[in-house]
Length: 248
Image (tube, rainbow, N blue to C red; front, side, top):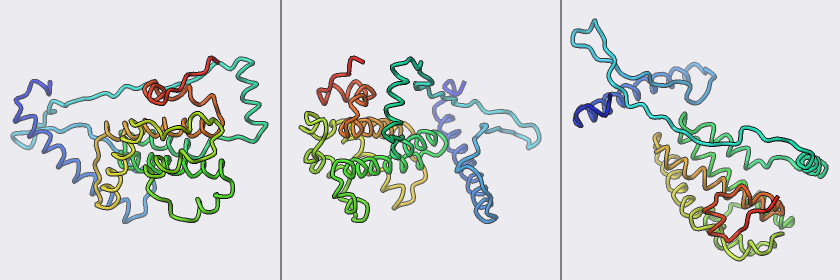
């Protein structure tokens, strides 16, 4: 097992694996770019490294295999009450907000292309805020779409509480501190990735940002009048904001 190797050998393995993987990925991406080859952003994975003392016989090196386990709603029973709710939404022309769709793309990229997941998650937060402003202040729609906005966190702290929200009680404070802290971290990481060109970010940190943006988007839905959305907020955020999960 990898964990049974001496510490120095574990570090040597990580270094060699990173060097070989980076060289292979760079060559692959150059070929794809040079010859205009279509495909997923990162359609490859490492099968581990092998070693040989004679260049002929190769042996697999112990790997540090990690498995990430998460939870998600894979389906839901559609009783008559839920069918009626779906019909109500369809009847008023509702559709899945673009911000939620972008966040789905971010989650799909986690583990395959974490920088893309980070950038898309932060974009989802910004799109979600603009859509909320356009919905609650129709006259501000043009400005929101055409004028550069102040930084996201500043908007959430200073501007959001001033909006004429449908659920007035929720306007007493900006989003939960845990959401704002994660977004600040996300902004810093995204700036490093997009301005400096960092290609590698920690998946745990990106996943934390993605989860915070998910809470933020459900909060936007709730602020916009969809009272049912608060049930999808994480328990910690509900506690911070003093929100109660609906009985239905």
